[in-house]
Length: 375
Image 1 (spheres, rainbow, N blue to C red):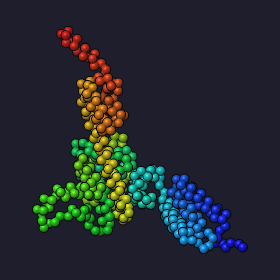
Image 2 (image 1 turned 90 degrees about the vertical axis):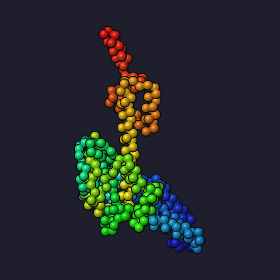
Image 3 (image 1 turned 60 degrees about the horizontal axis):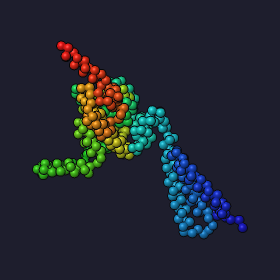
Image 4 (image 1 turned 30 degrees about the vertical axis):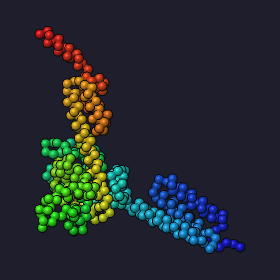
C-alpha cells in the first residue's frame, strides 16, 4: 500500500532531517546576515516538516515540536524580508559613507535606511586645514558637525584648548529628545524631578544639595556624563535651536574632514523618527564617554610634558626623579612613543635619559671650572 503524501517513509524522513541539519550547520558558519536568516529559516522549516510528515496519528510531542518549528521559521523569514527591504530600496553608500556608518552609527542602533535618510537631509563633506577656524565663540548654532577624519579642538579665549573632538564624534552636545519635542510641538522637560515647588522655596533651598546628589546617583547616564565633562572642560555647546557656540572650534594639527548638516533639517529628520531619537541618545552618550576619556588622556600627556620639561631643565635626572617619572607614566598610561617623542623635542636621547644626564654635561662643568680657576 502506497503511503499518503502527508506521510514520509523512514528514508524520506532521514533525508529531510539531514537537509535541515545541513542548513543549520551552514547558517552557523555564515558571516552574512541575510544568509544566516535564510538558512536558519530553512532549517526550522525542515524541522517542522519532519514532525508533521511522520506516520499518523501524530503524538502530542510531535505536534508541539512542529508548532515551535513553524514559529521559528516564521520569525527568521520575517526578519529576512526586513533585511532584503533595507538592502533593495535605493540604499547606496560610498566607501567613505559606509565606513562612517559602521564606525559611528551602526552599533548604536541606526539602521542603513535611517543613515541614508540623514545623508539626504542636506549632508555635505568639508575639509579644513591645520588650525583653520571652523566656528567662532558667540556665533549662533546653525550647523551640526561630525568629525569624519582628523581632530578638532575647542578653544577658550586666549587660545587655551579645553577639549579635543576626535574622529567619529559630534562637536558639541546633541539633544535628540529636544528635537523630538519640537517636532511634536510639545514642551520639553529634561527631568520631572527637577521641577521646583514654588509654594515652599525654603524647603527646596535646604534640599537642593541632597536632591543633586540623589539625581547624580540615580539619573540617566547621559546626564551624568554630560555633567562630568562640563566639570572638567567648562560649559559645552548645546546643538539646538537658539544656542550659541561657547568656544572657538579649530581644526587639529593635521586638519580634519567634517560631515556637516543644517541644524534645522537635521533636527527635523531625527525628531520625526522616535526610534532614531533613541539611537541618537545612545550615540550622544557614547560620544560623551569618549570625549571624557580623550580629554583625560590629553591632560595627562600635557601634565607629563610639563613635569618632564622641568625635570630635564638642569640636564640631569636623579634616580628618584627617574622612578617618579616611570610611576607617573604607568599610572596615567602614557605611551612609550609619546615619552620618546617628548624627549626628542627637549633634545634628549633615550640613552641619555636612561643614564640620567645629558651627554657633555660633565665636560661642560669641567670647562666652566677651568675657566673660573684661570681667572
